[in-house]
Image (spheres, helix red, strand yellow):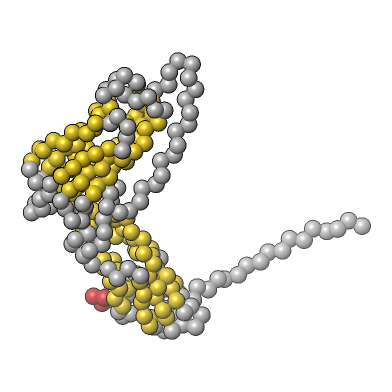
Amino acid sequence: MSARNLLLEVSATVEVVLTINPVAIVFPAFIGSLGSTEPLYARLTGSGSASVKIISTESANKLINIEINQKGFDGDPTRQIRFNVQPGMPVGRFRERVVLTTDNTSVPSLNVYVMGEVAGTINVTPKHLALGTITPGSTVRKTIQLQSAAEAFTFNVVEVSSTVEGMATELITVTPGKEYQVVVSLPEGSKQSFIRGQIVIKTDDPDQGIITVRVFGRAARQPGQVQPVMPVEPAATGGSTAQQ
């Protein structure tokens, strides 16, 4: 007697009691000393959203400002939760968790992530310096540009150095207080298989006192030489650096 194959179809409706939309608040880049230029909003959704109350909000970062109006800010019911970033956020990327405590026993708390990038008053180009493939004995020259990001803001570059062996740096003042160039060079190429290091630029700006630009490249393969695999560059992180 052969067994019969049975096909069982199961369907169900999943009910979302309470959630927040969107779950991530992403601020466009702004200058840290000024704070975010425009507020961003979120709202409660789900079958229990009409009757729930938000009891409190909590964030480890006190510069993240959260306001609640469950009827909706400016009469807009989709704008129940308002987010702002106050002045003072350090230069670099940020990602903060905000916890909303509710009176709903099924969903007593909700998490929303607030993230973005804080720009400084000094624009740095490029943010990462790729030297490419370098032939030993040849001269490699690259330029880093620093400019004031605001009309009224001035700054001075006080020192430039490099952690790359044999790399020379030259500071050029284009417009005093407004624009500078840092020319980096490897006069005799590189005998190293890989080049990895930093250009360290010190300024008199209290928010961007030290700016670092990562440098990377590789030496050209010589006849009969097996080119090793270049290590993967780590992802950029926040802080007072050129990746900002």
